[in-house]
Length: 303
Image (tube, rainbow, N blue to C red; front, side, top):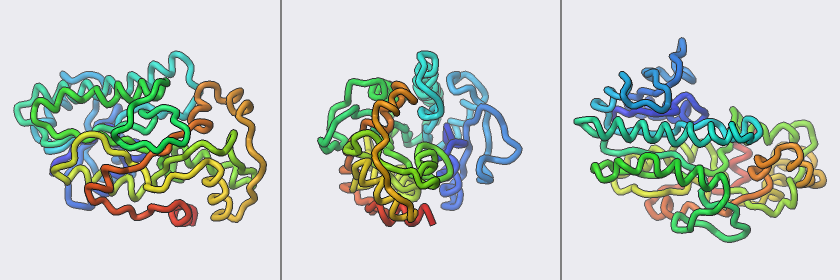
């Protein structure tokens, strides 16, 4: 297939691009600036876009595209959520989706499928309640962003384009993102539960994230939302104890929630609140997880 990836230079996008090319697909990525080499040395073709405008040369690529994957979006954990930053987080996701949908609408030849990125923040703060794709959305900031993010490409469905939504959990990549920052105190021997430690952490190994995306891309009946999380979520305290065991490090007293709120402000919800999310639809469709349990997943990553 000829595949176009928005956000192909990001953490997930780089790994996905490499995997798709190794599988024999042709991949082009949309980027804000051409790099001397394609991100991660993937060999993908690079096309410049601004993440919000459809009437640009990159839109012509849609005519030659069999599948579009939208992973575009500013990293939510890089810096505190000021009012300006919250607007940028939302715009980077919603504007990109609208631009892709507009380009697909205008194209004579439309792609067969569009995979739309989202996050389990869609479900809001939910306590111990198990959440599946049929669970309702929440009421907080991350929910509102996720709802708008998913809706940004909805206009392609009446055009006959199959659309699957990727609600990704905590992506356990030591190469960047939340998990790589999470590792720092453990490396120093200072790890411990955050806040109460009872909040749920719905995680996924990078190998399963990439394999699940490719599975949904190539599975003709895959449509609607899919939770991209391992089938065995854990509490924050259980995650910390397991990580300490795998790294051979101590597991100390909790980091008080009030201290994290003072340090991170509203962004502290990323570590103090959680969701117990289950990949019900992915399992029903027949996807087999390489890493369904946390300890083997961490052992594979840390080694």
